[in-house]
Amino acid sequence: TNTNVSCYGLADGTITASTTGGAIITVDGVLYDPTTLYAPGTYTILATATNGITDGSCTDEITVTITEPAEVILTVNFTEVSCYGLADGTITASATGGAVITVDGLPYNGSTLYGPGSYTILATAPNGNGNGTCTDEVAVTINEPGMVIESITTSNVSCYGQNDGTITVTA
Image 1: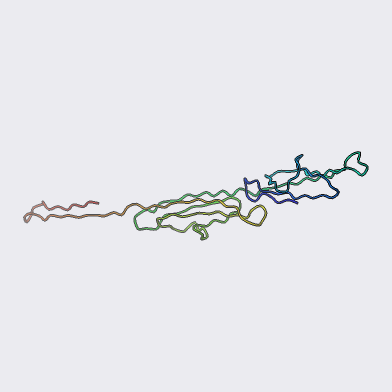
Image 2: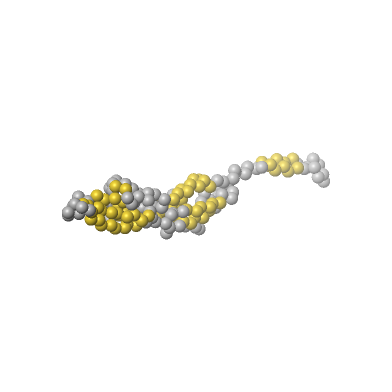
């Protein structure tokens, strides 16, 4: 029997083999070790034992294919908050491998608007053995511009009919 690689790019597949009659087991010509972990690929398992009249050997061979799931790739873009105090930043996310996307643990919704802060976007898909998950994660920080503070100073007209009054606005 075998287990597949759990997530794309890993080498954690396993092969479990046993024999009767004192046979020696090899995997692709290397003595079988049940603790060995395997990358995706096709492996030949050969069991060899001395024949009944001890002038040769008997063999049995099987082929095992270890697969891996599709890679989970998370793509994220975001926009900053437009003005101080608003919450109109956006996060646009997509993922491969049939992954489900969350933002800070909540289901991703492309129409949600975000205030300034740090957000963790996570894509999660079932692993190759159906007993866990594979993930990709991106962290983003949405910023906002500084607060606009204005100052207004005025001076009155010096005399009736004059045009020498002033208004000065600074930000």
